[in-house]
Amino acid sequence: MDNAKKWQRAELLLFTLVTIINILPYLTTRFFPSMDGASHLSNSNIINQLIFHHNELFSQFFRINPEPVPNWTSHLFISLLTLIMPAFLAEKILLLVLLAGTPFAFRSLMKTISPSNALYSFLVFPFTHSMFLFFGFFNFCIAILFFAITLNYWLRNYEKPWNPIRLAMLAVFICITYFSHILVFGTLLITITMHIVTGALMDFTCRKFSWKEIVNNFARQTVAITLAAIVPLTLFIYFFYTRPGTREIKFIPREELISYLYTLRPLISFNISVESRPTMILFFLLAFFLLAGVVTFIVSVVKKLRTEGATVDNMTTGAVAAAENENCRRLNFWWLMGSGIVLLVLYFVLPDAYGTASYTSLRIAFVLFLVLILWISTFRIHWWFGILAIIAVIFINSTLNRIYQPTIKDLGKLAVSCYQAADHIKPNSLVLPIYSMDNWFTGHFVDYLAIEKPVIMVYNYECESGYFPVIWNLKSKPNYFLGNPLTPEKYINFEIIKGHPSRQLDYVFILGQYDPAKDWFFTTLHGILTEQFERVYQAENCCLYQNKKNNNK
Image 1 (spheres, rainbow, N blue to C red):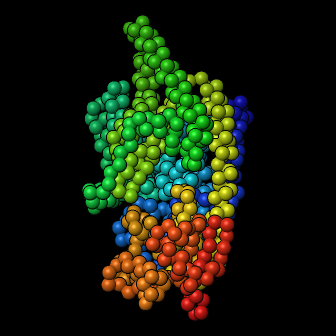
Image 2: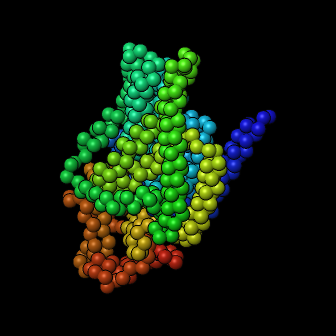
């Protein structure tokens, strides 16, 4: 075995080892305590109750969203897995797919773009545990994985004949990206479009083909991507067309957007002041590589112009052809630069929030940095820059994981406490969740009660938004109440839909400590719980109350 192959195997072994080490911290708790993860697990259970178990009570409250919205992929993945395994194990498998699949998909994409600079693929590791993973935006994370897979598939096949099999595979990858996250789907089409347009311009500049060949090649690739993306593209247009234009639109000030870039805000999940220290080091490392690459590029262009000016009359036909091929090989450099510029413009122009859809700016910034890393790999800078990237990333990545560990451990205990409360709940019961903790991150932890058992949580933000697979069944959904209608001072009626019958709540689950004197609601709630409910479960930060009438059933 020659030295080059030995080096490649050693580098692959190191990449695999770093991947494994990067995964381990997220397997230390029973649940991965993300902000929205419990809700995704709970709604996946609702999908199972509706489709596979035909639960009539669930059918009264919920129904499958008839609109083919994005955000389906993780829900369907977890739903199918939980048919044969516990929810926590299904979540672990999803994490393994994301934390192992994303770096290897990105590495494969980089080797397609710039085989000699695969060392820069190590730069992706801090992006595998971004704020989107900790926030439980699993569909976005899956979309990023398929962004890399789809783009890689396109680059490896765009010069080949688009037979039905290749076209079908491309269509499948694009559809999975769309049904994972709509914004990543949009950025995927932007990058592929930039590749097609830049490729046509490069063909024209290199004068390697006649204009007819250039037009035919451009048309062939355009037709291929249009056919492969026609279904999700139609759904993409329909999605925005059917959304009302009166929703609240929020823009982030430009100064704040700039700070998001140099602090690498998409990688910060819990504590900005602490986590921004290693993320800013990573940003300046990327800036250093970018500057070194640009300087190298400019120097090479100047040298080339001088050489061509001195020897143009003496160049052989082979030398001219070699120079033209060299220009053509710059395609990846130019289309990645163009994609980055477009994403940067969108980052500053698009609103951060549109109704309940939010974090648009940070999502675009996240993709922008991934494109930036790919662009850096196209520069012909010295190999030891790649060694520097590996050393720096291992340090930054391990530092971030050490910062996350105490928080993961504490939140993991809270998640288990909520999950264990389900042992004291009868199947097909109605539960009112009350959140009284001063921690914005744990607002949906109440849903851990309903990730396996057929339990109806009467609050469900995914059903409210309409952006997810499950929505409320407004035709048959019952209202619900606490207390006795005959004693108004100890009665709370949640009349959501006028004219619908009301059903008494079976349980009240409280996360945190509430103040009975806070307002009318909590004063009345306290009286109802004291007289008509009994506490059946108590943990450090949560407790469960059961309706005494339910206990006698």
